[in-house]
Every structure is written in C-alpha cells, then in structure tokens.
Length: 152
Image 1 (tube, rainbow, N blue to C red):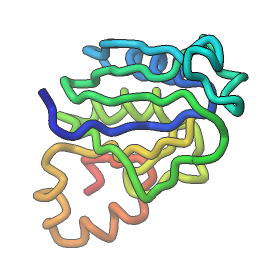
Image 2: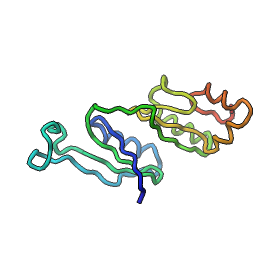
Image 3: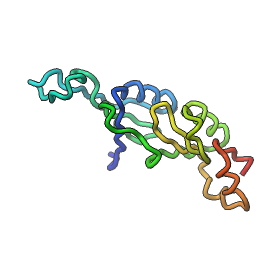
Image 4: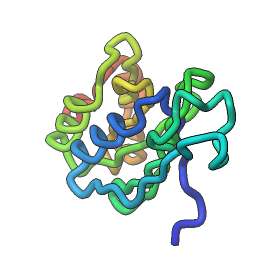
C-alpha cells in the first residue's frame, strides 16, 4: 500500500472531477466511494446538512498512484503551490494530456497548466532534466506555454 496519498478538496463536485480524471488517464480507475451520513443522528454535523447522503470521498488511481477526492465546500481552493507532474514519453503524449487537461490559457507557463477544477499540472518530457542542459534550452522553455520538445 502507498504510504502517502494526495487528498484533493473539491467544491461539491468530486464525483464529476474524478470521472473526468479517470477518463483522461488510460489506466484511471475508481477504487472506493464513501458517503456522508444521512442525518445528524448518524453523525452528520448541522453545518453539513447540504451533503447528507452525498459522496464524501472517492479513492481513485492514475498510473497506479492513489488519490482521494474529498467532496466538501468552497472554503479551500487549489493553487499553483501544489501541482502534479506527468512525465511524458514524447511530444504526442504531451499533446494528448495538454489537450485534455488545459482549461485556463492565462495560467499556462513552461509546461504548467490548470485544469477546469483549478488543479495545476506539469506536462513535460520524462527526460526534461537532460533537455534543459542544452545551451539556451532553459530560456526557450521559459518562453513556452506547452513544451515543444523539438524547440528545446
């Protein structure tokens, strides 16, 4: 079992988000779903009434990496301080993930993007460390939105 699992807080749309992620990643799958209690008698707090009987958490996997989506309210939002790196085999794979995940063009910079849920991703070639050692490659990368391997 994985020792550390990323927990992702969603604003009452965890099921929609997880369904999206497992459709984007070829091996994506839902592992388990839990639900909020249906009443205060069953343990639901008064302030959680709007969630009664709805999805609480969804455990899912992308490339064997487990995540938990928490279905909650608007109190917390994703920021660029945390992102997930997708190490791509080639330009075709970069293009695939970029095309499916990118939803905020104004947030794109040197291989980073935001999806429609506000989650940040880095979509880069798996050998990026070697590629940016080439003369001028780092500066060229900093000017890109989506990484174009041939231009590095």
